[in-house]
Image (cartoon, rainbow over all chains, first blue to last red; front, side, top):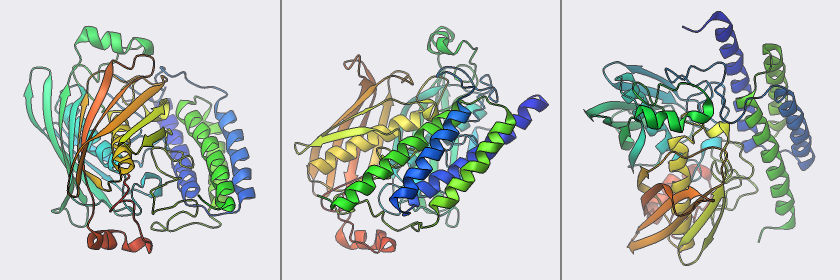
Length: 224
Length: 224
């Protein structure tokens, strides 16, 4: 468990993430006059400067994170603090399964009214990696094969599920599918993933810039 | 060409997008005290309310967009107006090739210091679709196979290239690769994609909620 100070910060980080997701959604849907667009841009830059008063560098791990177990408060998929994340709300089980729920808005649109194919791939990649990690297996994605069966609509609760299929040394395979929550038997997209755990010496090299011990992508965890 | 009024709006939309990308980047890197996080959240909600004074519904096409030719000012990959987009800066050619350049920051991080695997898939999916569209072929992604060869670093200019490989009726295949701009011969990730153009009657059904004629995903264009 994180210390109480970290829990309070996680809460505040999530609140800011939620507010910024609202702002992002408003920005990609707005038709207000040009003067208003310009005024909001100026105000947004002022807010950015306020947050930059104390900022991490590109390779620093966030104070709210625990890289040993792979918790990422700023994940672009499920991070409560990342306005880019929808966010997916995900759970997993030690039997090597994972499940996530998400509703996508205009910010993740591909063809008009539909979820972008890359976003679909990202959601599937994440639940695959989460299932692998839940099974006690580490690894980075080595191959990801996505089959798009039907258009995926915006604005509808979606469910993404994954399960580990097999293991062989540092290699783990898993399968995932995505469906509308209201019609879970009708698969909209599915994916197979192969995850390969980094050897300790290779992990030390890859994560050297962070200056931290990163356990989650070697022996135990994983995150796309 | 768009009318002059639309060009001016596109410029303003892009400026707001740039400002909000700065805010998103600052938010996912900040370590300022909790009071500041809370203060910025309140201010962000006020800005969102300002933009919501005139907002499109989930299926409305933006006034800056042209859905017939597939231009998307709010694409989550290359849209200048979408804070979720890195954005990728992409070009294409009628010979069925496409090329994009992008540098990813903390908002698109997977494992510490590395680009998220789903984001890599998204970039590859986009240049594949763009190459297909440039060749005069339409279609939604039907299958996408990504092979991750090496970790993809944050903060480094990346180049993504794609080329159409073959066509068969409504089906088009294409291949893509991603490398660091400084070392273009060393492939970090690659992908194969199959795109299938919607039949006109199916396109009419899929895009009915937009109330618009959408040409780019049937005969001529495409966007992941």
